[in-house]
Image 1 (cartoon, one colour):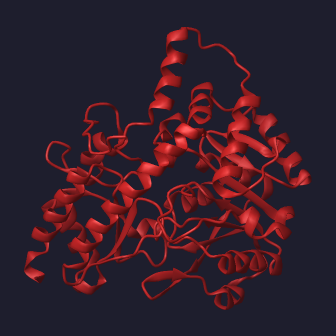
Image 2: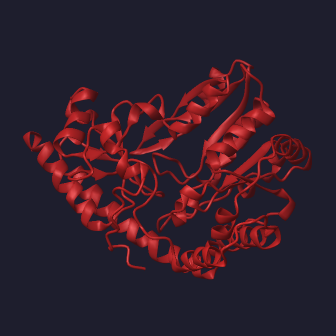
Image 3: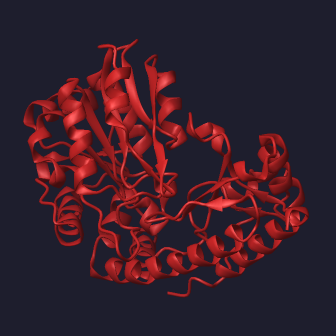
Length: 390
C-alpha cells in the first residue's frame, strides 16, 4: 500500500479538511488538517473492490449478510486478539459514539454518575451530558511520561451515585496500551463500586512494536456480568464515514436488555458498512494493517524527535493510535498563546486539550495519520512558530 500517495480531500465534504477554516480559522489552501481522527489514507484494495461490486450491482435493497458479517468479526477477534466472541453477542450500531449512547440509554438513568479517566476522548463527556447523566472525572497521573490510574484516589471520589465507567483502551489521546495489571485494576474498581464497564477498544489494531493490546473481556473474564465491549474497524481501515461499530455483550441478561432497546427504536446497521467490515476483517485486511502500523510508527518517531527538540514542548510517547498528545506547559505560555501559534502561525488545525477533560488544559492533539511529507511539513512549521524559544 502506498501510504505516501497524496489524496486531495479538499472540497469533498471532508469534515477534517473542509471544516478546518470555519472552526479553527485555518484555510485548507495553505493549512494542515491534523484534528479529526480519520486518516488521509485510501482504504485497502479488498475494501474498495467490495464496495465497487456493491455499487455495480445497482440495487441497494434490503439484505441479510449476518452470517458472513458476524463470522468476519469473530475471525478477526480470534486471530488478531485471541478473543473468542459468540455470534449472538454482536450488535451493530452506527459507530461507537452511538454505541456509548445506546449503553447509557439502556443501562443507566438520568442523574447517574458516569466515570471517565481523564483526559479522554471528548465525545464521551458530550454524550453523557446530553443524556442527562453526570460526568465524574477521575484524573489520571503522569509517571515517566505516561498516564497511570490512581485507584486509591478514585475510590475516595466515589459517592454511590455512580453507575458506569467508560474506559478507552488503547487510550485516546495518550496512546497508552493498558497492561494486564492495569486492566485488572479497572475491573476490581468496578466490582468494588458495583459499576458497569464500557470498554471502547476502537484503536486495538493500531499498536506499536513492543506492546500488546489485551481485550478487557480476556483480561478480566470474571466481570462478564457487568462488561460491554465496543469495537469497530473504522479507525484501522479509515471508513468512519460508513458509521458501523460493534457492541459486544457476553452476558445473556445484559444482552437481552440491549437487544430489546435496539428493537424498540429499530436501530440497525447499514449494508455499506457491513460489507466494508466483511472485506476488511480478512487476511487481505490483516496484510494492510501489517504495512500501516510501521508507517504510523515512523511518522510518530519523526514527529516526536522534532517536537521534543523544541524547548518547552513534550510529545507523549505513543504505544498505540496515530494521535500525538503534545504538552506545551514547559513554554510558560497561556493556552491561548500556544494555540494561536499552532493555528495562526504554523497554520495547523488541531484538537484542543481542554475538550478532553481535566488534565488536558496544556495539551493539543495532532493527527499523524497522514502522508509523511505532511508530518515533515508540520514539524518545520512548529519549529518556526516557536523559534524564539530555541
